Length: 265
Image (cartoon, rainbow, N blue to C red; front, side):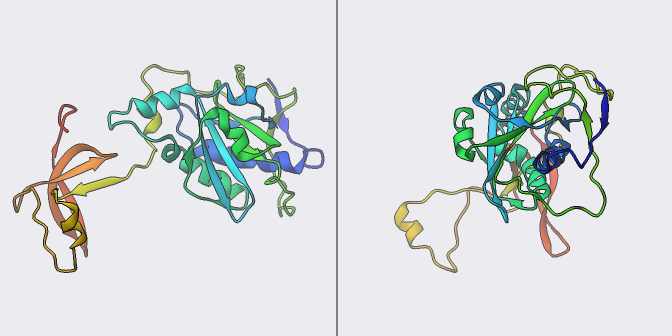
């Protein structure tokens, strides 16, 4: 496939905006190889059926919603993470955030949506922009109402676009640039850039509802942990390490003293 610079006088403004948003999303979407955006095309049920998961976000400062579709590889990697099953919406939030900024808005917290409902959730008509490396592994869905013409930039926005008609989503793509060959065992590597919430737990206790309702400032709760015992480090609710609580400047911190194997917790 040959490429050429897009002519800004002939490319539809909405397509340019959709592709710019997809390029931004492709740069941070978890994947086993670098991704780039291909030509926009209409989003249909045939398109969504080719993927394995979807996450939707509401735009702030804009109108409507956008969505990211992802393939089975990422869904499997999230489900099989050694840290426990990870949420798709959290994993693709940075990609949705980046796409929203390119659209002149910001994104609210994403939510996972069944594939069969994503088109109805966003509302028609929709534009789909494939995200591809050596194959298409995802797509950005943007309602046409979001793709309103933007003011002319001070410098022309050039994109590398194919001269042939866009390849339908689901077909293998041969680009003019080299991409890393797919390798086995990349599931966890796809997730290296995914941010996760870490919790440090000092201890736990149980109490009846009447005692919970009686809580007041100054109440002391006795935990199931002796003074000086190590605190637990949990990721996605899974215990992975223990350590001692320290003070860093004026903030609390945790000095890790023990990494636990998979059989613990």
